[in-house]
Length: 396
Ligand code: GLU
Image (cartoon, protein in one colour):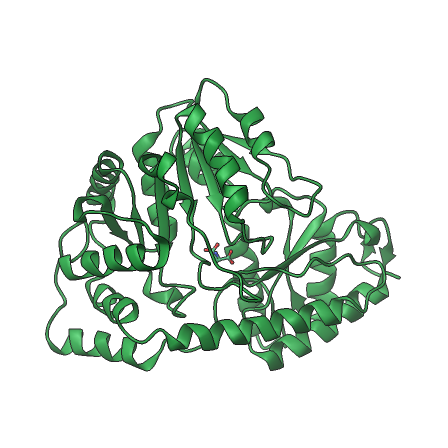
């Protein structure tokens, strides 16, 4: 067998991508599958953003840009952070990357030495622990709190030790849909200040918040503003997943080190997509409200339909585009294909017998849960929910 890197052999595959791809492949082979897997808005990218990209191509804006990002995009990001998040950066504190995923990895790679620990509260987004390992660090998982997946500053403090360098936060949270309140973040900030560690705050779902909630950025708390790297991007807010633009703002030395990583690996993010991102950030913001309104309607529908199942306990998501719920009452049942021992078996049962794809909770650090994405059209969602409900009913 060919020799491969031990670290990569040991690395788990991204399960959000794996289940999305599995559903896509079944669909492509002609099977009528409803995919409720990825957090990918189904809306088209707004017209004015697409036009900016077309104009960029026509104007031959098709060559290398600065590694860090174009000056006009960096300015637009500085203004966005300032007006939306009360975060105030100079240009040397911003790095544009190929998606928020790359931003997070660059930040981790920039700050970690072998064996350094990174605290990751569970449930977490699937890629955080593998990214920490890829960057030679050790993820230290904070077990999920009983209190409805709310962040728990005391549990975070207990997880911090002499080797801790960073804490990853994600609000609105993928997969739980919890939006951290200002007072919860203040409690965490006190812990972070005392420990002198860096926070990587992944705020990619910032704009998808429900029932009039407002997202709050932990980096705007003055006591720790020089300890926070704030990550965001245009994928979710502007339905621009395929354009791959993420960005971060943070302490200059971290940004400089992260830019060095990026300069050696990919160089800058796509030039045309950077132009489109300027149009997204500077242009009309109405499409965001329309999309969020639609996500809220879908959220309500998901909660209503799954509420029909007497043994399912649902907490309505406050933001993001997922419902994450325990399936413990359904485990241990037998169906024609065999025993449902865990959420992964349940997901396979739903996929193969009922033709609807979800993602099991294990890779999110919550082994008794499943994640259902409502980032698809209402028609697909209705069809998918019929199937999910039928699949659970079959389990009694
Ligand atoms: N972040 C999204 C999700 O959790 C997109 C897939 C991915 O990059 O993991 O579904």
